[in-house]
Image (tube, rainbow, N blue to C red; front, side):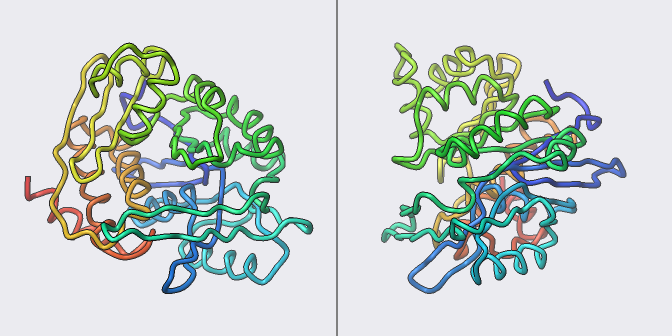
Length: 316
């Protein structure tokens, strides 16, 4: 349970952050990749997107991942460093290429993804340095996509016990997940974040007798013994279950450019405010503003000025 700013948290990338003059640290594990849009290639991967956002809020970040021994991999390293995310825990693979993901945008701004398998981040191996970083971190963030291959899956299973606070960004991508594996990851998490479609899919898979959103939130949280449970609702905001109480935010009205990375920005804002010891209403308002502002711009990690985030927050 998170009650004070003394909590240490880790993410699929590692982040270190100063808030309220108190040093915070975090780490994350998972995919780093190129999102291939019709307009060109941009840096991507949910674990990286989250850390980039946290860095923009004052965090020092580093990521546990793997790239290919190729030109795309070197370009990827340079860009990640330029975004103030440490790259010392990004491994190099001589056999598998740096990940390239084809992004297909729909007229409404939603996106689908063609994720090639296998690629370098499917083969992340455990190291003493990674274990130490995770153990030192305030929070550890991870997702389901990086568990599709046995190698990276085994590495994550070794890192999780070292983490002080585990954040599971569910992020289902067909056909790259197994519901039983997702269930086990949820059981190991202190905070689970997923969207409403994922909520209903997993509730049905795990035998929920309910149809309502709140009922299924409670069912899944109890089923997996998750103390912090958050569901995003797209343009309609988000809901947060903690201590038996559900908190809600209605979201913000913006003109959507595309939704790529919006959930990652939401989660970064959520983590930032949670680690600051903010009340649930403030956590949700800030997180929803970050997600909405991201959706109003193109790409996964456009610049999100703090003033722009707060301007949305003040609209409530």
